[in-house]
Image 1 (cartoon, one colour):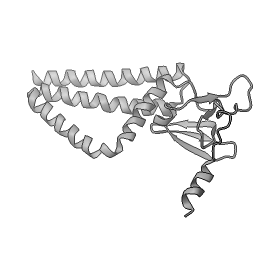
Image 2 (cartoon, rainbow, N blue to C red; image 1 turned 90 degrees about the vertical axis):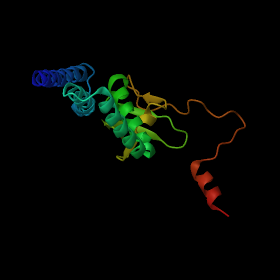
Image 3 (cartoon, one colour; image 1 turned 90 degrees about the horizontal axis):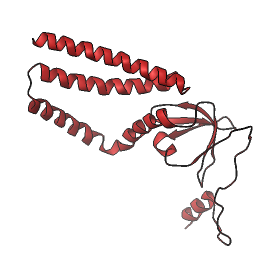
Image 4 (cartoon, rainbow, N blue to C red; image 1 turned 135 degrees about the vertical axis):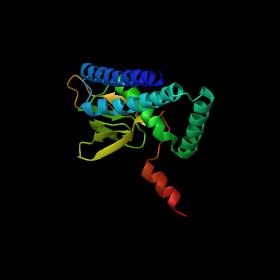
Length: 190
């Protein structure tokens, strides 16, 4: 009986992997997403599905819920402690999934991330699992983390526009704002 249950679990797992892959490909085509991004999301979903499959197989093979949950909680505790300093990696992976389903910008779009100190504008080259690559007009590549691009306003050039607007919120009259270079020089001088 255990072998039949194990075989059914394996068949269900394989079916779900194929169904998820087909769904992500279909969503990628309808949203005009690069195949690389679809591949990243599929891999992440497959890892989660495999973890669930292992959990179900352990239960089917006769391990009690308490043993399996004890093992998983211990494993997650070890992984959590190991990645405590790297929480931004997890937030970037989560942000990449949000970007996949709801990001209004695609590869090839001209965008500008609003930042007071730096000019982060150019063409979106790639959107990966951890970052967005933006090629500037000078030909340089800016690597911008996914979690940060969701936190800042992004301007997209549309309808034949060729330049980005100036400051969205200019400083109040009488308020002088020093540049980043001036701030750094002031801190370095004795």
